[in-house]
Image (tube, one colour):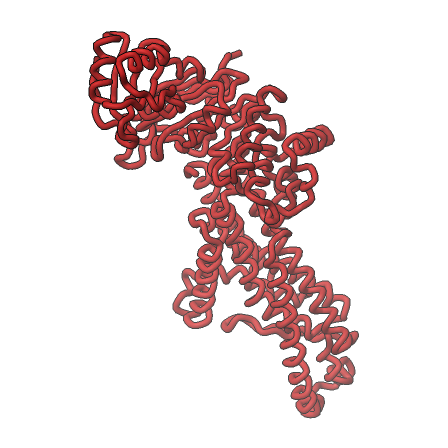
Length: 316
Length: 293
């Protein structure tokens, strides 16, 4: 038995001259919540469509639980529930009938599991309501219930928090996070909301221009050099002082474009206190000193070749 | 497969167009009752002349020709319009939306992403469309007969006289009421099969488009063009006439004269139906299996 629920090997997919996937490869270990992030047009949806056999790759191989999706789609996707794009249901049918029809579940065991999952996802009281009465948040819950039926061990959710209000986002986030712990389900989530992915996922992959730019456990991926943001008087002099004082321990210093007077200092190791002490001892007034908060966003921008707010760069 | 067919019927049963169908049928019945009542009055005026022209045997068999104009005749008369004009429209609506609507709503993608058999999906849909058409054909036929009997009564002797397609034989004969009712339902079942073949064109189109209206209209255009060709250029299209979709309705009128059915012609009609069924189901099966969603 493979340790990976999903493996994607060198998948290439083109639409005319546009190459949506350009040798993408990734592997999703069992039991994790795996996030795929990427800018618009990076190939996220195309990848999901190939994984769920909705589209065929030009070359490469996709396996689910070790079974080739292209050769044996029914067998490979037997224990997989997927919601690709926005959740779609039959609006004039009840939630219960939608679940029964779209999962093709039957029998007493199925009905018991359906009702238990509805309880778990918080839609038990709505099973006999028509889906047209559902809010988007309720539809997302119904979609997650559907993805888990009849016996899914691997769930694929495409932008599950899209269009939800803040409380809906928190609810769905908690629900997804608990799926692995409570039900042992492996979850694949795509999103362009980096904060969501950072909060939900244990593993991530960054997809850019059809290629996987980075992948692995979240902590490993984010274990990069720390960055300190400093606002001090006379930033040009402060920059020179820090470079002279810390030498090669400072990897780079940049001036932030969107926040004038702020220096972005990338160091080998955590040394915010030492930076502060050096500046203050040399007569600089430091009005702000903080670690750059959104590590995933920084990594994402680095890997996708996009810069945000950086005016110039002085390599040490 | 049975589960798939059941699911398809449940999906179709939830649609609002059933109300439109029932309203359309009710409107047709109101008009037909009025038209038939006027027809009865005219027939009454003609009756005197008819009786004088009858042979002694016919005078014995049909002592009161007015009684021939009863509820069962109303039902046969109304069903000609129902099955030639109204039911094809309904059939095109059901068949046209079967796959197109699911593509438009995204439920097709939700279904296919689970790796379920696409061939089974298409066949189940096609059978479900046929069963719904059969159900409505039987229901409307029963209601039409009921309305006819309530408004115009029923007599023991029935005259089976029908409008066939121009160029075809008009049929006539005297039969018992029981036999007339049996023939009436046989014709209804035949019509359901014919409707299924006719609407299969829309079914096939529905796999290529995302809008039900496009698929339904495409089928309707195909049907009415065939009908017009058959009505207007009957002689000129003799070579292709056996393959026109309207050909499958030819057996409908014959079914009313149960004793004089031309079974050879009926078998040919079924052969044409099979041709349309096989093409219009095979194409969606192939398309759905190769198309990307």
